[in-house]
Image 1: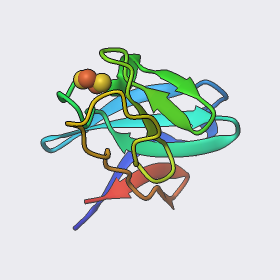
Image 2: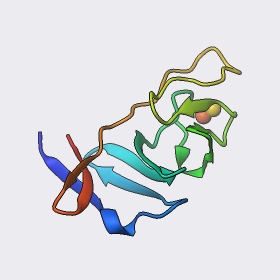
Image 3: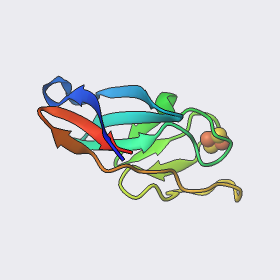
Length: 103
Ligand code: FES
């Protein structure tokens, strides 16, 4: 397990959304409603990239088929289809002014 710095804390702003690759995992860092979230950039339905998803109050809506996932728990917030799983949420670690993840 090691710390992977992703972004300087000072670079975040309301509406920030950026993708980072750590090993084989694509991560999406989001700042919305003054909250920061780090999620896997992969929909729990057919694996579509979530970076193009619309962010609503504490959720992200996949642009492919409209399933919405909680940015806090990763759970499915609406369920238009049965065959979907929650998305992965990662703890954000701050080290030396950088936000990152331990993987
Ligand atoms: S791939 Fe995301 S809702 Fe279907």
